[in-house]
Image (cartoon, rainbow, N blue to C red; front, side):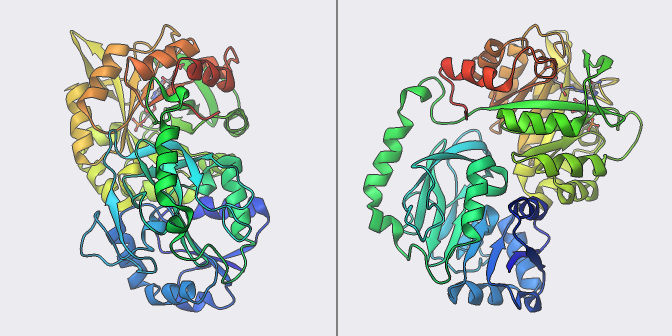
Length: 486
Ligand code: 1PR
């Protein structure tokens, strides 16, 4: 039986859903006694290293987990769960990890940070007893993190050819850690989880994989790959294409400049279709929740999440850390806050402390005012008097992991994104910016990623009406020299 460690740190629901899709039975492990009958274990996690390791200790799980791993049972740490396998992390110096693997987790040195999105993974081991058996020499996986294990760690089992190289996976014996989210990495992620369910006891790559595989060679291979022609324009960082489902009364709607909303279909069906077409992420915004002073739609979020094999961002009407936790438990990977963050900016820092910055997106509805842009709330109905660039900078300082920047004057017009707005925000912050509003063609998307310096391009109208498919958009964007997952 597979155990999934439940210690209140995140993406449990999505790991459970991924195992359900595989038809693999699992049980939750919240106390040491729950380990009885468990023969392989998954340790998921999002959030902060220190808080998560304190929770494991408080649940009395640290020593039993270490024993479980050291006794040779297959063990898989995911994202923060991988980092917790180590002795400690620069994120919270002085807080002890599980110490199953040697070494320290370090902060990535790159901009923008957090590193959110897809990156190519190059396994260093692909033998029959490894997690990467039967996987290609390289594949794309989804990451959301600020800290990572260095690429030259002797326990590295795969490298990420991300914005900078780092260890995408580590292993010792039958203990594995993956920095990416297999439960959110579409088909390759599914195969990795399936492989984990059949990994033999005690087997594995052994320690010192990277040394055995010739780390020097692997690193230069990684560097060589970073220089392939398809990365010419934007470097090794992959950009994201995100379809957005604006929701009102349980249906997808779409308007122009936030008004004249028209029906655009069923959210669950649409989300599933966009996932199949190759969306890098799906965004769902309950656009009338703040105006109607309603709580977010947990039931709908759960149903959409169950359909998705890629990451899922949810926003609209989110006012408290508790609501964010409920959305996380319903299957959201990240949550966006707009109105409530403007009204009480401390919500950003409280959310980042609880779930980690990569979980917290601040949505800014920007309306032109004079030479600049004013942030608005309640679906654009109330002005705040705040300058958008200033507000974005403050949100980033408070711990936002990403800005979702809605150009209200361009929204739904198909006349192209607002380049000046996007670029000025992207230059003012060191976190990623999602450009939103105005997409008319794939060329508009390519432009906002290059000239607008956005990390991701979000669109609604052109995808909903079928005038451009996600695949067509991504092919055209790649031809423009921008790295995207295809
Ligand atoms: O303020 O925390 O309750 O969050 C509400 C969220 O809902 C915000 O993210 C806000 O941008 C969004 N929202 C509110 N009212 C509307 C509306 O349309 N009446 N939609 C709305 C915002 C922006 C995108 C849109 C893209 C792409 N729409 O969702 O889909 O701009 O559009 P396009 O490609 O068709 O041009 P809170």
